[in-house]
Amino acid sequence: MSGRSQIRAGRQELEAEERTAIAIETPLSERFATYALGLVVAAVPFIFGSVQNNVLAVWVALLAAIALHCVWRNICGVAALAGFALVICCWLLVITLQLMPLPPPLVTLAHPIWRDSSALLGTELVPRISAVRDLPSIAAGAQIANALALFCGICLGRSRWSATLLLEIFAWSGLFYAVYGIVSFLAAPDHVLWLEKVAYRNVLTTTFINANTAAVYLGASALAWLLLCAKSLRLREVSRRHVIRALFERPSRRTLICFIAFFLTLSASFMTGSRLGTSTTLLAVAGGALSYYRVWLRSWRAAVMAVVAMVGAAVLLSSVLGGSVNARFDTGGFSGGGRVEAYRSTLEIIREYPLFGTGLGTFRWVFPEYHSRDVPIGGVWDRAHSTPLELAAEMGLPFAGLIAAVWAVVMTCLARAMARRRRDRIFPVMAFWAGMLGLLHSLLDFSLQIPGFSISIMVLLGIGLAQSSTERNRLSAP
Image (cartoon, rainbow, N blue to C red; front, side, top):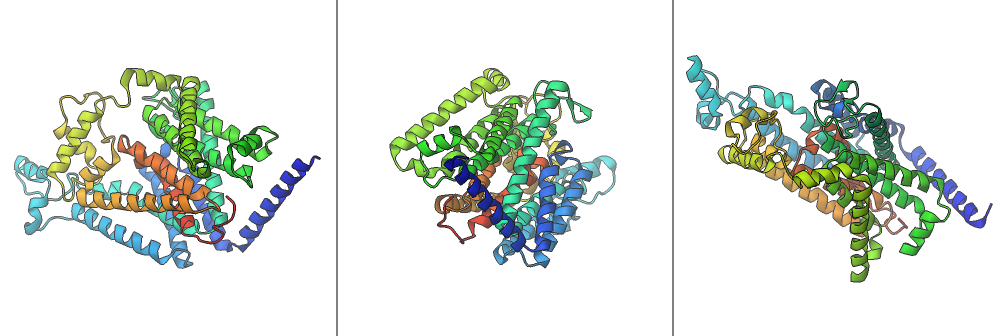
C-alpha cells in the first residue's frame, strides 16, 4: 500500500471512530427520534409526494410525536419555542376567524358567497370568512407538517451526529428516487407507481405527480451529493489544484460514490423537462459549490473565472442532458400556459380580500370568478402557480407578510453562518441553497406546497439553523 493510500485509510478510520464516539454520546431517546425523523425524510416523497390527506396525516402524527419528545426531553431551545409560538398563535388566529360563524359586528368580513347563497336558497346561512365551510381545517395538514418538520430539524439538528445522519438519509433517499425514476421512465414512462399518468407522460416524474416538483427535489438531492463529495476530499489546503488532484488522482471510494450519485440525481432532474426546475437547480448547485469553497473568491479575477466556469458547465450539461428542457424553452420560454394572466387574477383576489383572505384551501373554488379571458380554459386551476400569491389570497396579506419575514430571517441567519463557519460548513450551505432552490421555484410554481418536497426542505432548514448557532469547533477545517 502506497503512502497516500495509507494516509487516506487512516483518515477514514479516524472519521469512523469520531462518528461512533459522537453517536455513543448522543442519548438513546434522541437517537430514536432522529431515526424516526429520518424515516419521514426518506419516505415522504414515496406515495405521490404525500399529497393525499390520509398519507399526510400519518406524517403529521409522527412529526408531532417527535416534536413532543423534543419538548419533553428539553432538546429544543427557548428561542425556537418562542419563535414557533408566535407564528403558531398568528396562524391559529387566522384559521379560527376563517372557520367561526361571524357575529354581527364582523359580518362585513364574510365572503359574499354566503349572502348570495342565502338569497338564492331563501334561507339564512351563517356568514363566514372562508368561501367554503370547514375547508381551512381540512387543508391545514401541509402547513402543520412543514412547521413540525422545521421545529424537529432545529431541535435534533443541534447534535452533529443527528445532523449528519439526516443529511445523508436525504441524499441516499434522493438517489433512490432518481434511480427509480430513470428505470421507471425507461420501462413504463406512462405510469407513476401503479397509476397511469394523466399528464407528463413523456418526461420523468419519479414518484411525484408533477414533473416540476420532481425536478427541484432531485436538484436538492444533487446539491447534497455535491457537498458530500466536497466534504469527502478532506483537504488541508483548499485550492483549485488540490481539489482537481483529489478528484482525478486516485479518489477515495466515498468520493467516487458521491460523484456518481451527484451525476445520477442531476441527470434525473434534467429528465423531468422542467424549465424553471432545472434552471433553479443549476443555480443552487453552482451557489453551493462556490459557497463551500468560498476561499477561491478572494479576488475579482477568481470570481469571474468561477462564474465563467459555472456558466460553461451549465451550458454543457444543458446540451448533453437537457434535450426535453431545451425543447420546452424553445416553445415556451421560462413561463407559459397563461401563468402571468393567472397571477393578475390572483392579485385581484388579494385586492378584494386583503385582511384574512378567502380561506385556506379555497383557491380552486374562488379562482373561476376571477378567471381572466387570457387564462387557458383547459384543466382546473387548483393552484396559483405562485406560493406567495396563493398564500396571500387564501390567508391575507398580514399573515403572508409574517411568513415572508420569517423566511427572510432564516435565510439571513444561514447566509451569515456560511460566511463565518468553518467546521461543518456543509450544513448551513446545504440549508441555504436548498431553501433558496425551493423559495425561487415556488415564486413561479408550487413545489413548497407539496409535502413530499417541502417537509424534507424544512428539516434541512432546521438542521442548518441549529448548526448555525452551534459555536463549538468553529475554527477547525471544513
